[in-house]
Length: 227
Length: 206
Image (cartoon, rainbow over all chains, first blue to last red; front, side):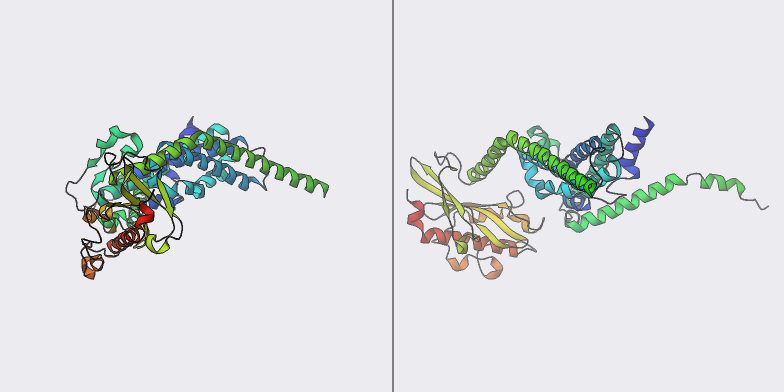
């Protein structure tokens, strides 16, 4: 149980694929201009990670070392194509927006990275959870960056929610800032780089704080009082 | 040596097996989804077309009555483009051409141009483009009303030398900070109208 908790913590925070491993930045930067776009790509990526990790783990004893990478690529490409077709059929408008980035999930290094670094060496359940944790961490990064850019760039949150949750969600859009002119830089690619940089910096600060919380309390009583 | 050979053959067989399984998975998904995908594409196109020519104005199946033409000069692409024809009681009401403006700020802009039988524009829509958000994307109807400024225009009520943006001495507004996008769209619409005028008989027949 503790093992699974560690896997989750690893995926969501300590080894977050976007903020720590810095993998999959191309889709991360390109699609994070709104929360819904980020969520859409995040879910597709998570699904791919869970399936590819599970399958790679199942076959890990049956595939020779020389051909394991081509086999992983085959597995990942098949899964992504199947997901692309499914999205095309059931979330057509979201599929049109995400466009090329759905098939490009194949090239997201974090997927083959997890297959190679984790799933090919660990049991099935742990691998599936690892895929879920890494995918959720990546999705969280997409949503966080998406929310930042959407609020700054167009003053809304959850715009176009109906593309994902159906017509009933059309009113879910939150106008955070009313009559907002828009801040173009946040929506354009440079905004994605700047936003990502700020989030990584913030995460590093939090990690540092968490590591040395006792320093001050220890030092205080040691300071000699000069009378 | 023989051992190496067997292991190579085994590896090849395993790879082949996985290819087969992958093909099987993709084919199965395709088989399950392809009808839905075709239907989505049909409905999406129909929705776009009917925004220009509402279904009250025609009674034919727009997607079924389409002609293919090739004219790189007029439509900005060297492949076949489709012209849809809206008819009521078998009389032609309007044509919807699908030209591409090849010279947008970031690549080409795909347009729908609806022309009434008399050569007057019913409307223009941009269906896909990569123009700068906040600047060039004002050609979208949810960003600005600019694209409606074509409605009702024709070659007879606006001389072709005024089919330009205002900065170039024409009739159409440009956007603050983005002249290239509207310039490209105006040019593509003008060329489509000119093509219609020159080929009116062939296009409206049948």
